[in-house]
Image 1 (cartoon, helix red, strand yellow):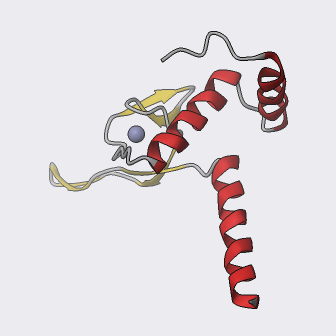
Image 2: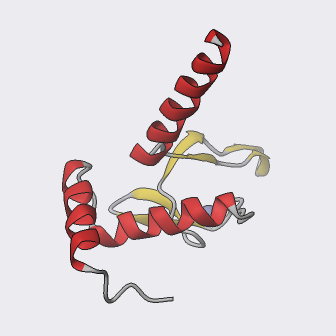
Length: 109
Ligand SMILES: [Zn+2]
């Protein structure tokens, strides 16, 4: 799948959305693909961690991550592994807002 070409008006919309959210256009496109893929059953456990600019991300799906737990080693034995969770994106916030609004609307019926 390639996105070398995007129709002009759609491209303008994507550029504005990327600027508004301080994202690169490639990251925005990847977010869109990931969202649709998730809705269609894609799942990634984010087990392959890489670092870019000292910030963790999943090397398999490029999701940006936050480190939530530090690795714990006691007497040379691994007690707890380092844990990560996905950073909330503007898309997550948007869909969270939509679902809150819909559930509120359902409640008011
Ligand atoms: Zn992943």
